[in-house]
Amino acid sequence: MMPVWIVDDDRSIRWVFEKALEREGIACSAFSSAQDALEALHDQAPEVLVSDIRMPGPSGLELLQTVKSQHPSVPVIVMTAYSDLESAVAAFQGGAYEYLPKPFDVDQAVDLVRRALDETRRAQEALEPVEQAPEILGQAQAMQEVFRAIGRLAQSSATVLITGESGTGKELVARALHRHSARAAQPFVAINTAAMPKDLLESELFGHERGAFTGAQAQRRGRFEQAEGGTLFLDEIGDMPPELQTRLLRVLSDGTFYRVGGHQQLRANVRVIAATHQNLEARVKEGAFREDLFHRLNVIRVRLPSLNERREDIPLLARHFLARSAKQLGVEPKRLSEETLAHIARLDFPGNVRQLESLCHWLTVMAPGQVIEPGDLPVEFREAAPPLPADWVAALELDVERRFARGETGLMDALGRQFERALISKALERTGGRRIEAANLLGMGRNTITRKIQDLGIDAESGE
Image 1 (cartoon, one colour):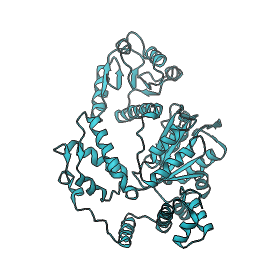
Image 2 (cartoon, one colour):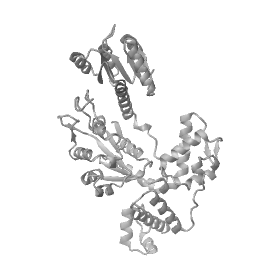
Image 3 (spheres, helix red, strand yellow):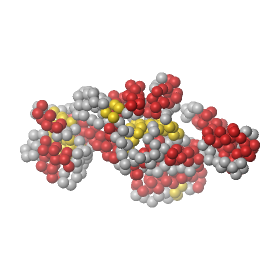
């Protein structure tokens, strides 16, 4: 059955709607009477229903009542040539999503259908069991630290800020934090604040009352209400407009908010997890991000490493993505030759894990054989990967050049911590965890190495 149903006894209206929706790539089914739609409802429900009110036989309002009683989440748009107050009131009292008076502008009508369709699908995604989310894979030390952070935060409701480059899997971490929390049985709702137009973002987050602005002909619940009792994931928080930063700060401060155009104070029982690929400290200094909001969000920070920081995970991830793509496409999984694995493990992946996943999906479709050789890679991946220099200083210089080319900042702290962690970990490994001997090997004092072990989160035995 098609996702959108059009019900109208006027053949020309049905034709216009069908052609307009077809042009937009939206499949629909058309019915000439409410009775036909009611019979079809026995087998399957639409995602969006558009119905005339006055028709021979059962009316559109009767159809509305039946649909809302059997499938309350289905948005119903009612339309009529008789634009009177009584019809409008009856439609909204019956739970109509929107009221469309005839004659209507076709583009506006299609836009209304698309918005209703998008809202239905977002609601369905929000209610999907988070157990279906992909597992986070990684054996690298940097990823083990992320796993430990998720474990420590399992029973906490504290606000978390996830940082990392685009494509590193920030939403996966947010879903894992939700899945292992006491809120796991409640909704996980995600919104990308950078992808949402500024004028719509406030309504998306906080909802709006009927009549709050032009086109707001029905009350709508925002993401905070949709996530009640669960987790709200705000992706790319660094791009949030300043005026909305103020409203978000209030919710985080006292747990209350108002719908757009509303006067009733609502309370939000929601855990907020935010994520960004930007340097929020720099955004604060630039005046583009509120400092008080930054401190509210930055209660606990989880940093996701780039794929270049966890190259040893590339073979593991590649095999996983190849197997998953094969399952999705219903084909036999393909395999990377040792030469190909070594080659891609030396490549830069500016798009991180997401880019590697896309490459594996392309190979599943396009590679000619079951064993993937370097020559089977897309042209942009075939170029010789830079060799790993034997000289660690040269290797460091090469890595720094790549990071600068990607626009990274704060390298002294990030690389300095990695350098110290590597030295101390190897010294402790050499001495069997004996800190005094490790400190002597490195030329530092006992108190210094103890403090650094704690600061860097190094697991070590406390033996002397």
